[in-house]
Image (cartoon, rainbow, N blue to C red; front, side, top):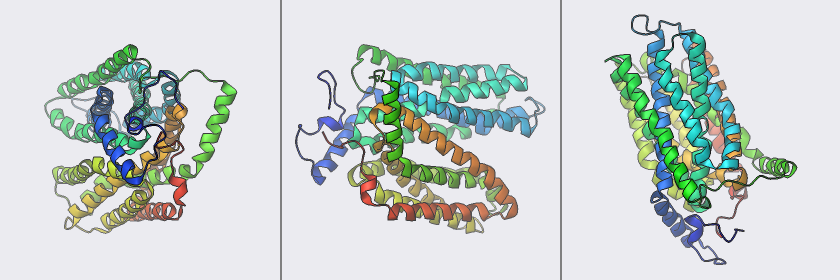
Length: 440
């Protein structure tokens, strides 16, 4: 149902009311919705905020702060333990504040939340090179995580609202492309600048992070001019008791997804912290540049395949891509862990990148399809918090497993991913159907 003044999203405008959607019509509708989505100025605003904030997050917490805080000559000379507190504080704040940020997105719309939140994150970046006390560094890390936490619930909720349910996998694929385009080069580019001095590195981040709240402010200007248009429309206040009952019902329907979202991120967390020592000690990569090239190859495969596979998911549904994606990921991680040298490493990494390109649009399309539009931001925040908990626990366990046996994290992660693939294979197809109607 829609009100007389509400505009339909691209996918919803593709067929007249009452027309039955056949499979070919649905496929054509998904393609047209995806093309129309890319013509929208709003989606480019979401792309800009995601690319800028993820560039800064990756550059700051993966490369710049580890070097700057522990450098005794040109940096602050802090211990690795104190560095860990600052980095973990940022990720903790990002995880915890996703839930209230998602609720605010549902209540006020994405742009009204993004503009002040990303402004807070930018302020933290501006102040970081100017403070030297551990307590202030911890506070700024928390502030950055708190501000950045709003980005994902806002941009995913807004892009799906903009594109419509027919193009939900394509919409999420576009946002994850922005994440890869920003977060991938960030740590690499900042490493080059660190060699020329920390001031230049912090200066670049100050310029880039300014783009995030600036794009959000431009989007907010569009929201104020067109308050009834998606994705700028804010939800009206609801009766609290009714809202809680509806939220509980939505969570019950999506409850079968929660174990999967936790364990698949647990598997990812098992491998992430041990990749660098494993590559150095067991794959015998001669330099950081060789390791970077391997990561670049896997990321390039993901980037090239993500959007076309997202359109495929919109046409055929999520079940088959999830089964294939997790099955291929299990095989790729296992083969990577069993690899004894550089030979054959490239195709294993590319296989992992392809499996990731299958999983991302299928998984996000499935979760978005199980969420009511009125609670999309809040539930996405809850789901992302669960995923963050999984990756945090996996990271802690992965380091312990690596001390016992170097290949143990890879074998364990492969077993988990394989079990997830079998679980989705055994799940009835009706479970993968959207909670909301795909067609008008």
